[in-house]
Image 1 (cartoon, helix red, strand yellow):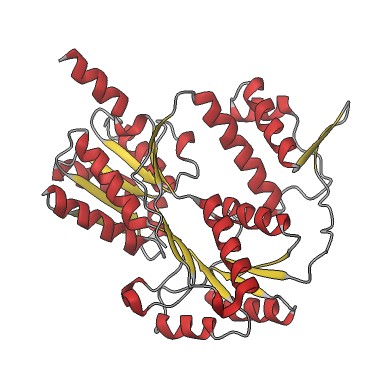
Image 2 (cartoon, helix red, strand yellow):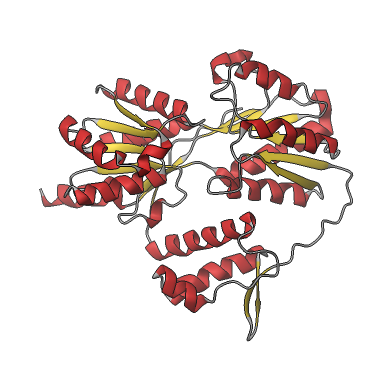
Amino acid sequence: MSVNPAPRRIRDADARDLKFRSLAADIRRGIMAGTWAAGAKLPTEAQLAAETGLSLTTVRRAFDDLVQEGLVVRRQGAGSFVAQRQPVRRRSRLTVGVLLPDTQLYYPRVLQGIEETLSAQDVSLQLATYNYVPEREDSSIEFLVDSGVDGLILVPTLTGIDNPQQRVTDLMSLKVPVVLLERSLTDLGPGDRTEHVCSDHQGGAYDAVQHLHGLGHPRVSLLTRSETPTEAAIVAGYQRAAADLGFEPQIHRVPRQDWENGAPDRLMVELSQSGASAALVFGDREATLLEAAARRAGVRIPEDLALVSYDDEMADLAEVPLTAVSPAKHRMGKMAAEILLRRLAEGDDCPIHQVRLRPRLVIRESCGATWQSAHNEQE
C-alpha cells in the first residue's frame, strides 16, 4: 500500500498558533522523557512566559492543549501538575511491545499515535528504548518478548551494520508478529517481505528541492548530518530532483558532532563560493546553526540564501522560522499499531502491509516564498 498524495504546502497564517503548539510539544516531550514525573508541579505560566519570551496568552493556550490531552491538570490556587497516568483497564489479553531508539524529538508524536490506537482497543503497551546503542537492541527485544507481548513494533538499527538483510530476517523470525517503523530494506524491492510503515523521505527531499527551484533558485545544495538512518533516502531524493530539474548536485555531508565545531561557518564559505542561493538542510538543528553562521557572515535569510530544513521538530523556533519537510509522525504511529492489531486478529489471512507516507512541506519565512512573491509583484 502506498500513500503518496500530492505535496500540501502549508503557509503559516498565524505565527502565534505555531508558537503555542511548539511550546506544548516541548512540555509534552519533557513529560514523556521524565523531566517532570507524574504529579510534579510544572513551571507557572508567568515563569514560562518570562523564560521563553512568549506572551502569557500563548503559554496559556499551550497548557490548555495539554490539559485537553490529559497530560496536565490544573489545581485552582496551586498551579499546573503532570497528570497521574491511569492504569489501563484490561479487557483484552493483548499486549504490544514497542522498541524505539529514544523518546526525544522525533519519536514522542510517533509514540502518541501508537498509544492512542492501542488504548482505543484496550490493548496495553510495553515500551523499551536503546538510546541509539545497537548493542542494547537485542536485550531490549528479548525483554519485550519475555514479558509476554503478543506483537512488536520495532525501530531497529539497519545502517552501519554488516548484514541488514540478515538482521531483518532474524527480527521477522521472532515468535510474535513484527511491524517495522521508519525502517525497511528498500534495496530489495519486491524481495522485501517485511511489514512496515515508513516516511517517504525520498519524496520529502524531492518536494523540498522542487519548491526551492520553483521559487527561482537554479541550483539547490544539500547539507546533511551523515551516518544517520534517514540520510541515504534524503540524498537519493535530492539527487533525483537535481537530475529532473537539470542542475549539478552539490552535497555536503558533515558528521553530527562537527556541526557544533565550526562546520556551519565553513559550509557558508563553500555555499558562497559555489554560487548556490538555496539549500535543503537535514535537519532542524543543523539548519538553525547554519542560520547563525549566515548571520555572522552577513548573509541574509532568505534574501541571499533560502533554506528548507528537514524533520520540522523545532523549525518554527529558529531566528528566521524555517520552512520544513514534516514527516507524518503521529499518523505513522497510528498506522503501525493498526496494522499490527489487524495482523494479530487475522493471522496469515492478512495481506502484508508496506506503507510509505509522503511528508508535507510546511512553508515559513526561510524559503523566501513570501519575500519572492512580494519581490515579483514589485517588478
